[in-house]
Image (cartoon, rainbow, N blue to C red; front, side, top):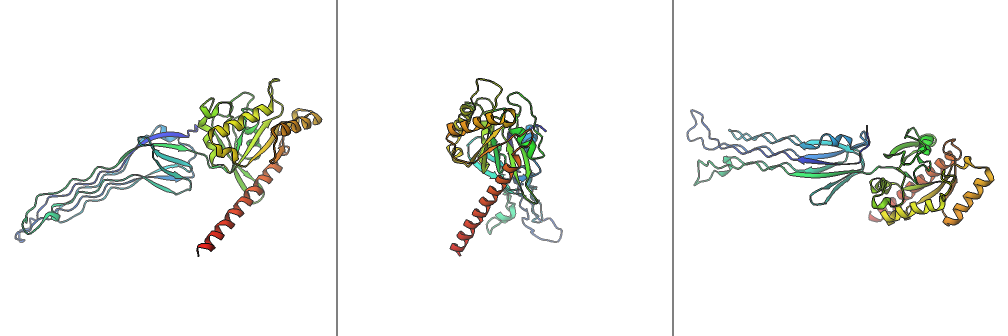
Length: 352
């Protein structure tokens, strides 16, 4: 299925059922009086996060969703049946906003999480409620209210622990193929990866993390050049960025350092917070050069970037150095989780 990370839909809550204007007509009941029941409430529309869905492609076909209307009231004070709620499954990681107002309605980050996006209309009331000492045979009743209608924008931001960033053909897709069961397309031309790919990286028994292969960024991406902001947004949820740099680019006039700086610039232009996100340098394709030359180029890149964070030298195609990288990433994520639990426990102890 083609990956789609943005879609617009229209949702409509069910209309409320009308109240009833009815009177008792039994043969042996004198002056039976009004007995019109209320209508039923219209059904609501909910979006439900489903971890079995990983794209918004279905919403390019089905664009309109309407909950069931409430039934009308009946005689003998019978209330009409309420309309059934409509549950619409969307991928985990979906952000929902109102197209007309720009209001952010919700962020579905957990499987099973529900978001009410369109309320059903209130029910009308029957003539039974209008009975009084001066109006013993009321014929008044009220109509059900129309359900709420909304035009929604759904945006999908991938939920991954680790995001791969870098220029096209830096080796990101090859790296995720090496470490996980994901099989993104790999070829020797720019923009091989047109859609983000998720892969689960196993690291020992019952230890794993999710890695996202983000399509390659180019200069001007934050302003919409190339694949632009369409995919830059996917790195926002990641906890750690792996900056993959090709130390042996095919074009002779290409400078890996300038390429790396261009990526850093685009991250900062899109979101200053992304530049502050933990980021490790991954120098790829070291097997394409003699060992001494590869070492010298790597040292030059690190020095010119003034890089102070973790550095890894790998050959993604052959798998060299990739498992050490995965082990260290897993250990870092576990340490972050442990620290988060400690802070939560301290906060709970303070409150209690």
